[in-house]
Length: 136
Image (cartoon, rainbow, N blue to C red; front, side):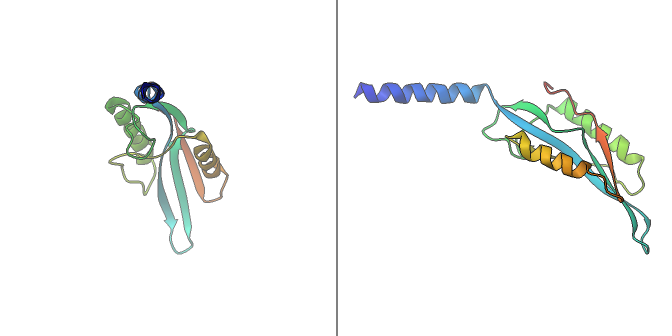
C-alpha cells in the first residue's frame, strides 16, 4: 500500500514546486485608434500602438490568460502613461483607462501577430513603445 503513496507524494511535490516558481507568460500590449482626415474620401489613418515585440515575464498564476497579473502597479502605470502620451499627439485618439494586452504561454502566436501588425500598409501607421523591464 505504501508503494502507491510514494509516487503520488513525489508527483505532488513536483507539481507544487513548479507552481511556486511561476510560469512564463509572453505579453504584447497594444492600442489602436483612427485618425479621420476626410471621411467622404475615406482618408483615414489607422494608428496601432504597441510594445516593440512580445516580452517574456514570470507570473505566479495557473495560466497565462487575460486575467493573470503580469506587471506590478508602478510599471503598469508607467506603461499606460507612455501609451497615453503617444496617443495625445494623434488626432482622434482618446486616452486609455487601462491597457489592452494579448498574453500567451507560447511566444509564437504573439510574434506572428506582432509581425502582421508591423507589415506596411498605406493607411496604417505603427507606433512602437519600449516595454517595461521584464523583471518589473
